[in-house]
Length: 565
Image (cartoon, rainbow, N blue to C red):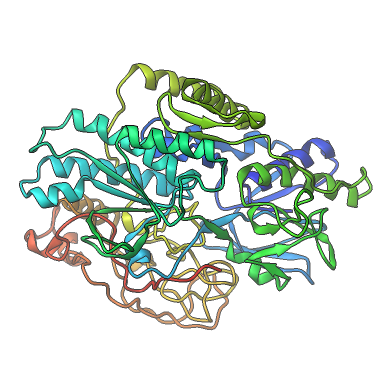
């Protein structure tokens, strides 16, 4: 059984499938039915690629494996079972002879006031879709805004973290808003403003200085304000207070400071190294020869740097998965096992258009040659959709980008503090995910993600977002969303009524608890009135958004900032 289908899990499953030739029962447990090619997410957020281009069907790519949709909640190493929750809230248990833990990573959190409430991460497809809609909406609202200060705030976008993700988000985002600004009415010369912040001394501090200088020059030439040695001291709805004492009015804060291992690994009870489960050079967990771990969730010894571990990058995760698969087969007598050894072949950073930074085989490149190498590398690394991705790139060079907001992912659907960035938070339905349903009988606390099973927290029940039969109807949700968009604000999820007893499908002993009310949530029209009227009574504009003066991240008072694991 392979838990997780990111770079490590996907390549482990594909290698095992090819080696076994249908002689082994391979099960892949994953919350989604696709493998996400994360390096191209910035292009999804900037409208270069359509979302399905970076999502490769697991069923099509892994014909020899059985896909089980669900989120692993707890691993019982003694009983050799994995407990999970299905997409409809139903619990399940899977047994195994060999286990590969490849659960990946989640957004890295720092104890900065206001960040958990007002920032959004960039680890999954829902977050990329939300950012594209949000940036588009801010540009459109700014074009119709008469207040110069508010107009400037809406056209200001702050990205924290100058690593791979943050650098590419800022580079592509600036191009996207500049293109959109050309088609909108100008207002006193207000142009889109992008800031890239990091406490490091230079952009891309983990790479060679020549690549760093190339990326820095490309960002500045494009108009991105690069501020090194500076970060966020506090985040508010009106803007961000910087560590240098300055205040930047903005409605957009993108958090790209890094990642941390998935909290699931803590439930194994094994030795950890900065949140990653410790393994030997063969990717086996000490004392558990039937358990392997790889990718961002595993602390794999670096053969070329004794005493250190391989970094949490896609390049290593992909190769971890392949070696883990070979060693799983070796444990069954199919071949000889291999230790993990790998030398970096170089890095690529896509800066948008014909700009990129790359050093294939140690040869530093910039400009058009680097862009060609970068896109060629991505096409070669993708396990599917290559023709569609290349077609989007060709069309993007000839046609203008489509700057429209679909409104499919709302702000409250993608909280920064979540152990499941691959899934959007749901305001209703089985389990009412807030970062998820409670798993394997463990109860959640106010919808927060916890340790055991990513979502359970200290034996308390989660009532957040679960409306069930008593929640508002689909018609009401759509109607409220349309009114919210017309008023320029995002509706918050409906707060459910108190409930008693454990939820359907849970075995936990906790009782239902009503989520504490949140400031700024809109009132929901009376259900009985809607049943007797095709449109229902009009409660007036003030009843819907009097507490939401402007769109942007919805403040969530129930989630405090957390430190890094």
